[in-house]
Image 1 (tube, rainbow, N blue to C red):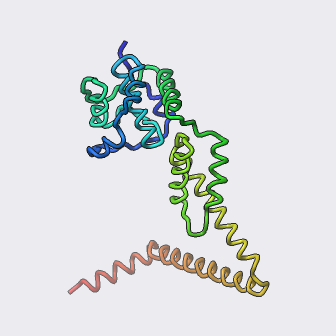
Image 2: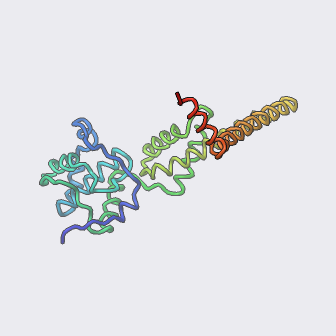
Image 3: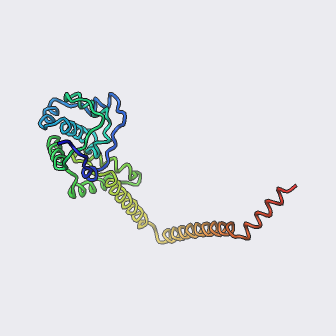
Length: 239
């Protein structure tokens, strides 16, 4: 029975951007199968099944995530793997016909690579780890990079990038607030009062500028202003 597209795994997996035109060095580094890899792949029957397994094996090992859409896997990657397995060339990679087969491949690959899924306990561990390393000079994107490095070291399948961004933004925001409150607590009452007055004046100035800009915009859009502007333009342009 021929494979038919099944998009359920695509919805399940976070997006993984693969190089559209990988270089020879990238192919050799990220998509070369070892003898143990080839032995593992050949446990499965069917050219399509073997090719998909090899793609996911290399993707998880190199990027920390599974490929989320087989149709978009670059043909250069697919055929580089296919040649190592003695498979015929393909124009595209067919999706699996059954999600159960796809899930079985995922479990087997995680076990083969000694990796585990990202779960609630891993999330708590990651939050503690990032909090210990957060600081005023570390941005949320930098925390995301550190989180991915840590998860790879812990041999955990990376979650969606948006998940790590939410965690990093939350920790960065909390760290900055704690630093500000710590600084505020160390101020004398007099300095604290002066700081409050300064911040109030800044907010007042911003409000006045905003209101003034809005009033000018309202005047320009009024019929009277438009009429005067039109007459002035006509007068200056007349001979």
